[in-house]
Length: 311
Ligand code: FES
Image (cartoon, rainbow, N blue to C red; front, top):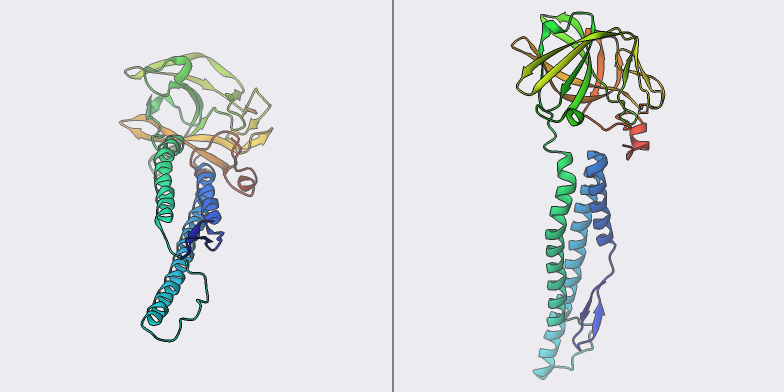
C-alpha cells in the first residue's frame, strides 16, 4: 500500500488492492507451467494479464478521483479570493503528489526494471534449454538388409559420433515388420526403462555373434540377433511386452520409441518419443505418441495431473 501527501503535506493512504497479489500469483503459475504443462502457463498468463489490467485501472481511477477533488477545491478557493461567498470546506481529503511520491514511484519502477534484467537471464538459462536445442542427432544404423523381416535385432550405437563409448552408447530393439504400401515398417524401442531409466533387457535367447559396421566416420554400429518373449528391467522388476507396453512392475507407461526414416537404403534414427500405450501389433499397431518425457512421468490420463512433478 502506497501513501500520497494531501494539501497539508500529510500522508494519505491510497486504496488497498489485491490485484498485485493476483499478478504475482499469475507469474508464479507461468513459471510452474513452464516445467509442468502449457495449460498451466496459459492459465497463469491469463491471471497475470487480467490482474495487471485491473491493477492499472484501479490505480488510475484513484488518481482521477484525486485530480477532480483538487480541481474542485482550486475553483472554490479562486471564487473565495475574488470576493464571492466563503468557500465551503472540501468534502474529502485533498491529495497532492509531491517530489517524494515521484521518487517513490521512480524507485519502484527502476527496481522492477533492474529486477527483470537480473531475473530474465537466470530464468532463461534455467528454462529455455528444456525447450530448445533438444533435437536429437540422426543416427545411421546402416543398410536395411541388416534388419531381417519378422526378426528382432539389438542395435548398439553412439548417440553422437566420436563420443566416448561410456557416455554416448545407446541401445535400441528393432523389429522389421515388412512393407506397408511399399514403405518399410519398423518397431524401434528404446531400452531406457520408463520407471527410473535403467537399461531394459530382452528376455530370451540372444545371438553370441555380433555384426559391427561403421556407417559413417566415428559411428560404429553393433547388431545382434535376438528372440525376446518380452523385455524386463533388472532394477525393480519392470516388464514390457513386445510392443513396449508395460505389463508389470513400477513403470508408468510404455517404452519410448525412435522415429526413423529410410535414406539411400539405410535405416536412420531421428530421435525418441514417448508412448502411453500401444494397441495392436507391428505394422498395424496404434501408438499413442507424445513428445519425449523423462522416466517416471505420466503422459496422459488423470495421472498426469495427479503427479505433475514426477520425473
Ligand atoms: Fe526399471 Fe525401476 S528402473 S523398473
